[in-house]
Image 1 (cartoon, helix red, strand yellow):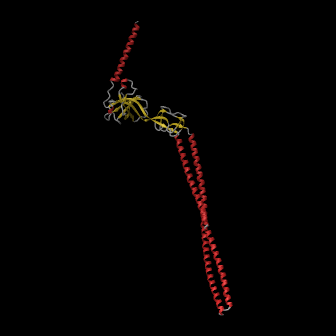
Image 2 (tube, one colour):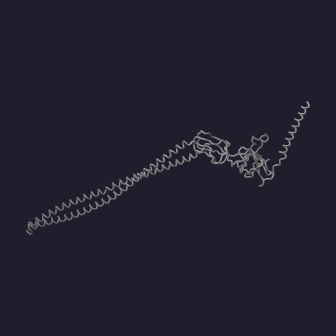
Image 3 (tube, rainbow, N blue to C red):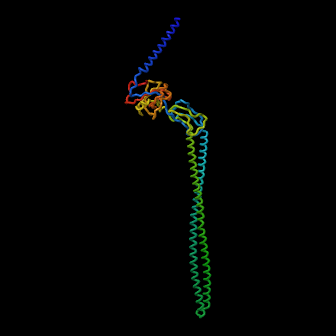
Length: 399
């Protein structure tokens, strides 16, 4: 019986001691803590960062995703790989089209070379033929002129012979000339008439030769039309070269595009950060712009906290601030006020006491200047805002 009473007494003493110790600790942390200076506004919250979506630039099937939620990655680090089978097929098709176009260009250029040689020979033939035809026409014209001149002389001689016949006939009747002289004049006239007929035939022959020469002069025009036909063929071949070159350029552009797309099959981290969520999984077929993961930039993280509505008028953008992490509460991390919510709201539900949750507060962001990887999204932290002056009070710190 005495032992039971002793045990109860010990238990009572222990309980009283715990109560006293608890009261002392409460006094130490709540009462003995130095008051917050008037130019400081204190707040608590969590480290956060704005999500950025890392998406694909091209369509395809996801072959591999190399990160998990919570992983910290560096800029340029591979996030995911897409299947490159379709891209390889498109690249091969584009290269084949370019090679075919190059073959067409070479064939057309060879044809142009042959046609130009043919055109050169045709032009030489046309020029020579023109010169020969012009020479024959001039020669025929000279022969016509000569024949006509000879005909004129023969006709004049014939007219004189006829006149002599008439004169000698009259004189023979009067006995002034002999009959023999008359017959000689008549024979001379008949001979001159034969000369005139011969000259007429020569004139006709000369005109025939001139007609033939002039007809032959038209032959170079036929040859010129042949040269024009060859020139048309050259022009068509040159057009084919231009078209083939355009096809080749287009095919090579497609090759470059496919090569660029193949590079886009590798999804990389655009900046240093942490993987917030993994949206897609291997095997899924995604369209261009489809999200693979969301990232938070570790160089742009901030403390998200709330300031009572009555104090928010003292808070301004770009005011200096400090952040204290639970993992190292004695070290102040420099920050700056980067955002003040435009509207007030009730205290978030994760506040433990009901009477605190019904208060109106305004959300603020304290952007950490040099995170250095110490502050990570999700960490609880405390903050202080220097709302007056430029110098921090000496007795500030984690409270």
